[in-house]
Image (cartoon, rainbow, N blue to C red; front, top):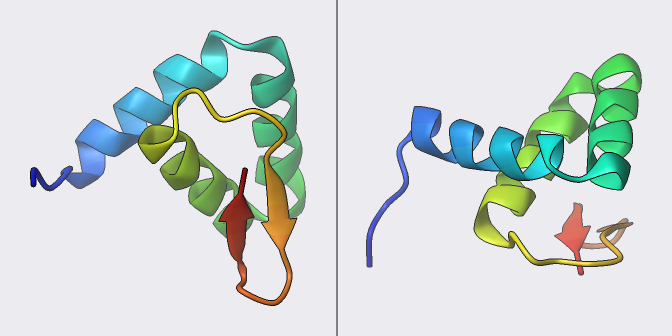
Length: 65
C-alpha cells in the first residue's frame, strides 16, 4: 500500500475538482463557509476520484459516496 504525501493528495484532488464543474462549485462553497470541511472534501476526492453524489455523514463526521 502506498501512502500519499500531503502535497500529492492536494494536487490529485485539485486536478479532479477543477476538471468537474459541480465538484469545483462545492469545493469553493466549502472554502468560504468551512475551510476544514473543504480540506476533508479534497482529501475524500483524492482517494475517490470517480465518486458521484458525495454527501456528509453527520454521524461518522466524514464524506461518503
